[in-house]
Every structure is written in structure tokens, then in C-alpha cells.
Image (cartoon, rainbow, N blue to C red; front, side, top):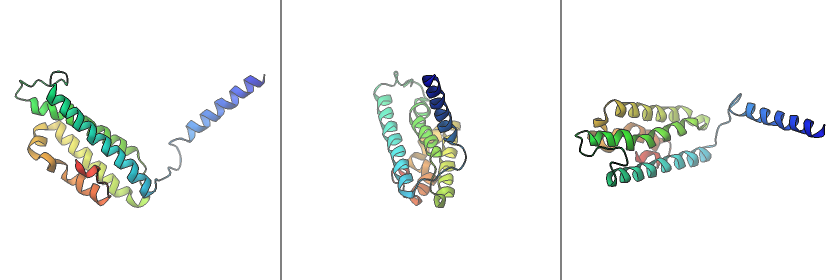
Length: 152
């Protein structure tokens, strides 16, 4: 009987904890917390993109790139360079920035999403544009003091 009551209590606590996550009033991170978390996300994405890019150059067949194809560079953008940026953008969207920075962070994420969409539609544009392809997002990242996020 005690075990059964304990099990019910634990179950209620778990349900209560889960119900409390993500619902209701969302708390905002401090500027320092947001910056630290965003920088970690961007640094991780940058390193992953570099790592996957080098792997694809060294082993195009294992990376799913047909290096004999005239579209090999475009495949590299879509299959290798873009996925870490997509993941980074999704993770940044999940953060709760300080209220004072909400609009700027939203503009940053929107700029990233727009650039991702452009690259998916025309991977060759990324190759032509190079680093300037993310110029708008990088400018906003600099406004937020997110140095690692401005690298893209």
C-alpha cells in the first residue's frame, strides 16, 4: 500500500514537472547566460561544419558527394555545409533571450533561416557569395556581441 501511494506521488511529481516545462510564463535568460549558451551553440556548429567539410573533401564518397559530378560543389553545400547551420539555427530558436534582445535575436534567427532557404533553393549562390552569404546574420550577431555566431 505504501509502495503504491509512493508510486502515485512520484508519478504526479513527474507529470507536474513535465507540465511545468515549456508551458505558462517563459523565463528569460540573462544577457550573460544567453551569450554563453548562444556562443556555445555557434562554436559547436562552426567546428562541426569545418570537421564535416574536411571529411567530405578527404572522403567525398563516404560523405555522399559525387566528386566527378559537375554539381559536386553544390552537393557539398547542401549535404555538408548547411546541416550544422540548420541545427545551430534550431538550437538558437529554442533559447529564451533577455527581453531587451528578443527582437534582435528574432531578426538574427530570421536572417539565418532566410539564408538557409536561399542556399537550399540555389546552393551555387553560397559558393559565389562565400562568407558574404551570411553578411546580414553576421551583422546582427555582432550587434548581439555573439562573436562565434558572426563567423558564418
